[in-house]
Image 1 (tube, rainbow, N blue to C red):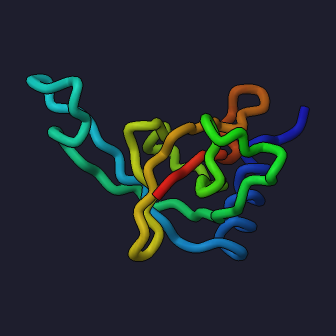
Image 2 (image 1 turned 90 degrees about the vertical axis):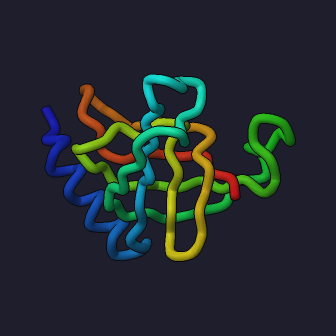
Amino acid sequence: MPDYLKMRERVTKSIAEFGAPAIIRHKVASPNTPWNPGSGTITDYEVYAVITEYDTREIDGTAIRRTDQKALVSVNDEIEVTTNDDLVMGELSYNILNARPISPAGIAVVYELQVRR
């Protein structure tokens, strides 16, 4: 069986080399306002990320817009990335519209995010 933890290390190293440091801004709603994730606690988690464009064949104009981007993000064991979070790279902040962990054998190796500014 492949060693997916070593694979994660290699993927993280590659993203760090070819991408940039980034932050997953994790928002947890206050118990009093669960419908508003921004009203509670905000915690930043360090990751590495590479932003790429969607192939024109992937853009349908509805679920994926022409201005949407794809982000490959390293795994931080302290957090599971969700659509309530934001991806921050330098001065730019992206809304996470879709967060999909690539998890062979249940071990997250990398996140593929659909992001929009």
